[in-house]
Image 1 (cartoon, rainbow, N blue to C red):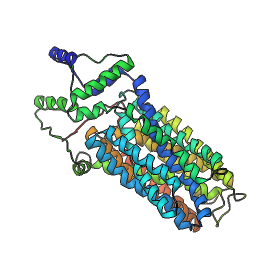
Image 2 (cartoon, rainbow, N blue to C red):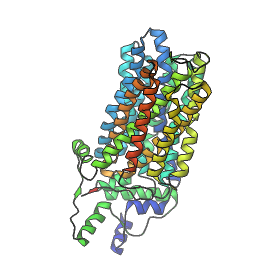
Image 3 (tube, helix red, strand yellow):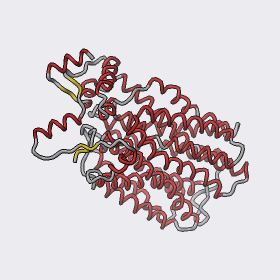
Image 4 (cartoon, rainbow, N blue to C red):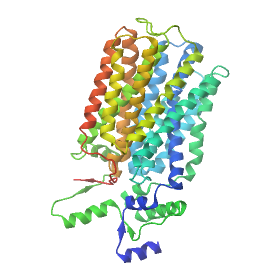
Length: 478
């Protein structure tokens, strides 16, 4: 610490944001992106696999439709539990420790589920897998805290593409494995990304922003020094300080009170989300995440209902498709997300987060609206694919906006709880997209999706600020 001690004597100070800006987005951040992206791929693979193993298990084990649906429900239930829990652990014990536990739980349970001897054991193991998958937002928060504020939105969109890559690869793997080796081999081989994340964990480092927020300035400086060496850049002259110190200095210069709250317990972290400073943000974020998950998974289920002849009231498919066609449909549907990600990357820094999300919600609702009445197969497919393009865009931009608007002290908790609300939507969505449509209430189902999309758009516009180009905040100031 001799160099920093000398710099301290020079009288200059800098924050983590200023250090990251000076270091730029270099080789070190690419490595962080690769690992965080791998974690996102794990989430996508383990969620998408549910589209393939359900029908196979129903046939092999003679399951009822309710039992088949429960395989998906328990995963989302696990994610609901895990999303809030891992966020609290991350904010109170560190991003890196959380990543390790998440990787262990997901990897072990995902692999063991391929050996499930019966239905009950499979449900238990898949629910535990869901609990591990609930830690997905921690990967995003961890990556965000290494990215300079300039073009941060674009890099978060690029991070989101790993999810789509995971869905595409899983569909391809299912096309190859399921007809030849069956569901057990698909579960086992799909756990390879989880093993990779666990193996590569030893190369990760703690977030310097989290370390600063915890008052571990020396440790944060060591991490920033490593980034400087890898990126072949230099840190700013002076001494590293946390945003809390800067805010305390402002308090001495300004007459108004500026109290800093930094709770240490999990309960306190959760309660902080409902503090006067964050209450509006938190409630609106819950609406947005509910709307995103409800619409995203609903569109996938509607695509299945309308394209496989499941709808008994109206026939929009020329024939009932076989298993191979099912894998192909999922593959093509996943490709529909690529334009949405590209558009998100183009508008996130130029237009901003709020306006872009609101516009995408409106466009998504416009694509869905014609489906209030049955359409022919080609038009139905085109409308659903178009809607998915815009909904994946809102999903992606919300994933950028949420960790940006929350301070470091509750960032993972805020994103985790919002994600948990989204998991509730994932559990509710089949009731609308499947049960209402099968019950000949297609108009009611589509109107419900329209209402959710419009409410989400209004919620976005009510957020108090735009985060484009804004430096991340470490603590809540009241």
